Image (cartoon, rainbow, N blue to C red):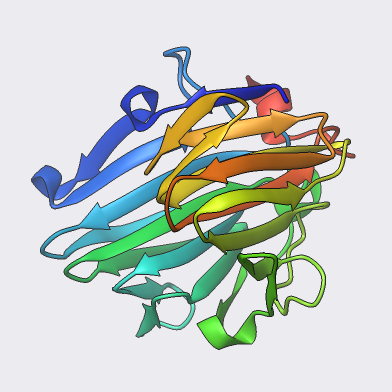
Length: 248
């Protein structure tokens, strides 16, 4: 198996409000040679706050913006509803930014989250009205098999509706030992280790490391302890011109 590994130490590092919110970004459009947008994934940030903090109101257009609460609680405020809505551990929100929407985000003390942007076909999305949905943790199907517990956020049997095509998103909790995640040869597998320590194709992956696997029918790994991995499977060839292709 051929994989590309991006340890936390080589990811984009940032934050807000004097370090009240800390970010590491596996994927970000930038000129520093780090991992750029690919497939229909445009941006991916892991954000956390020890004491809690707020990101002020700011606008978005076009992209589908998904927020996943990994730990704790966050709150969301948008220009359509004008109320704060809480999201707890395991909950997910999707913003289909379309022709434009503004929002604010508040991370509670101890909160950890992913925010990931997908390209839904900018030519069509720019003319669509903005919309969003919140999904509680228990809305997503969970499958247990062979020492793995798989929670499906996007894909078969998930209630989450995305416009970005060919995207599957799931979280896998695993026990110590050898495991396999099935993939498709024509997909890119983007993987973030939320917790634990694993070995993939002789590469040691530790907490908050990111790796990619392409042209594979499975991802085999050996877990040194219990842990959790977050996986996005997206098309190797997107059936429309993406923002990154058009403007980079």
